[in-house]
Length: 189
Image 1 (cartoon, rainbow, N blue to C red):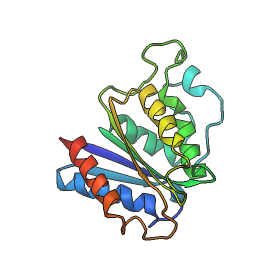
Image 2 (tube, rainbow, N blue to C red; image 1 turned 120 degrees about the horizontal axis):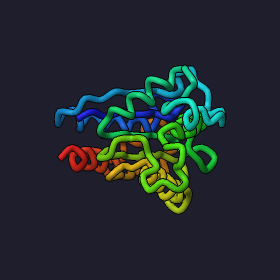
Image 3 (cartoon, rainbow, N blue to C red; image 1 turned 135 degrees about the vertical axis):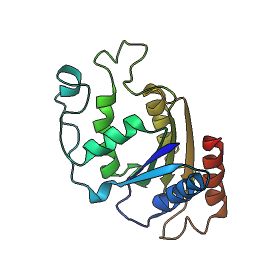
């Protein structure tokens, strides 16, 4: 089983990354092959709204560091997306990446009952870490559940770490680390 892990935090050892790595480490123990992409270390643009992926190509026509990420997602079995929550949303790095996944949609995506170009059967996990308490920003998970459904993922899981303000807070939260491991076990079985 192949996993693509897209890390949206600008902090290489941030809480969302820590949770994602725990998920991926457990999946590797169970035989998965994991490819990590640290968005903050890459050189790329956000979607240009050119619709080239709908009129000229079945892929994003921009050629930059995201090209390899988008190609890897087309081939993967499980997509892991991890982000910090900054100002009530995903990080800017992740938002630019997500906009580029518009290329995964067919030209008539608004009316087509199968709007995604991705092969069926993929699974996804969305991981977020935020400094705020649980009563804030829960709608992000609803928003991205819709995203995964629209892109044809057959199964999606969500891991949300709240009240994580300092580096290392995720590691100290056994409930979140256990959830990451158990989610990996469920997705790998």
